[in-house]
View 1: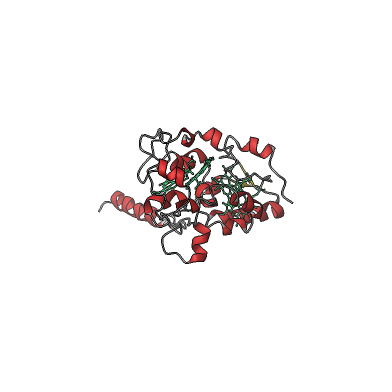
View 2 (view 1 turned 90 degrees about the horizontal axis):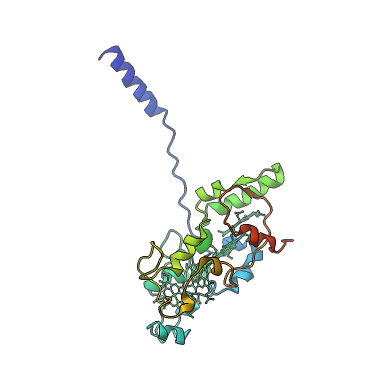
Amino acid sequence: MSFLQTLVAVSAICILSSAPLIVVADTPQFEGYKVCTKCHDTHEQPWRDTAHAKAFISLKAGSRREAKLKAMLDPDKDYTADPDCLGCHTTGYGKPGGYVDDLPKARARRLIGVGCESCHGPGSVYREIHGDAERRLKLEAVSTDRSVLVAAGQYFDFAEVCAGCHLNYEGSPWKGAEAPFTSFTPEIDTRYAFDFETAIRKDAMHAHFKLYDVFKGQPVPSFREEFQATAEEIE
Ligand code: HEC
Ligand code: HEC
Ligand code: HEC
Ligand code: HEC
């Protein structure tokens, strides 16, 4: 081996050995609404009052008879264990930590319906950042970058999140549509047509509360300023 070859070989080994440790970040898990409302107790009742929180009930036999008949579903059938329905009527169905059949009752109760994490993302990693960031603001007067939340799995692209359930049907304008589809399409009734800009402002969404600079920077949804302008004060 020539001197040059040796040098190349040695430096290659150096580069390899100086490679940083590969840190496998925790995969964010779904945990259920209770971990969120422990801190965001303000949001619990406003969310409970929404159709989203109650979405599991619609799968029970006897509920929403007219709507089911119109959509060619059997109003006397129990759909609460039907994999074709659970994806949009529970939280994180089939994903890490999310709803699956035969969960212990207490755990199932935290994951039925469209929960906090259905819209904000699986929370096991970012929820800790929320608490840490609040302390950081209090102790050091420093705001934390929202990019950290994105990296921890928090969702900010709400149009896409809503589409995953509301525009998931055959012939949908949304390119991500794939089975199992919703039966409640604009073809069944025009009231099922989903316009994001209208829907995001409806009562089906929880009321908003003021945010206090714990986080800074992008991403911030286009409607944030509008919602914050009329948001309720906390404390
Ligand atoms: C340890 C307490 C704590 C927990 C647990 C927690 N949060 Fe937070 N969260 C906070 C604080 C504090 C803020 C910052 C509020 C502010 O800016 O005034 C925040 C901010 C947020 C924001 C706004 C982020 C932004 O863009 O500024 C959202 C949305 C949110 N939390 C949702 C959730 C959800 C969903 C969960 C459950 C998975 C959760 N939080 C769990 C304390 C918590
Ligand atoms: C995990 C699936 C899922 C996600 C994500 C989701 N929704 Fe829904 N949404 C539902 C289901 C299911 C219902 C019907 C609940 C019921 O009545 O059983 C519903 C109901 C609604 C309604 C009430 C419809 C009416 O007749 O008044 C509105 C408005 C709505 N959603 C808006 C949104 C918006 C805006 C987003 C995104 C920020 C969103 N949803 C995200 C599943 C979802
Ligand atoms: C791809 C997501 C998705 C799947 C899968 C899904 N749904 Fe839904 N479901 C929705 C959404 C979104 C709404 C709210 C529609 C609206 O009001 O605009 C809804 C609404 C409903 C409603 C209320 C309709 C009304 O007008 O009162 C019932 C009942 C319902 N779904 C039952 C079911 C059943 C039963 C299944 C399985 C056979 C199922 N859903 C599968 C997303 C889904
Ligand atoms: C159907 C979707 C949806 C569900 C379910 C949902 N949120 Fe939100 N949430 C939103 C949207 C959209 C915003 C506005 C985002 C913004 O301004 O950045 C928001 C804003 C927030 C904020 C920021 C402050 C505010 O009030 O605007 C917090 C905190 C929050 N949600 C917590 C929760 C908690 C806790 C739950 C469950 C108890 C929950 N959310 C359930 C969609 C949802």
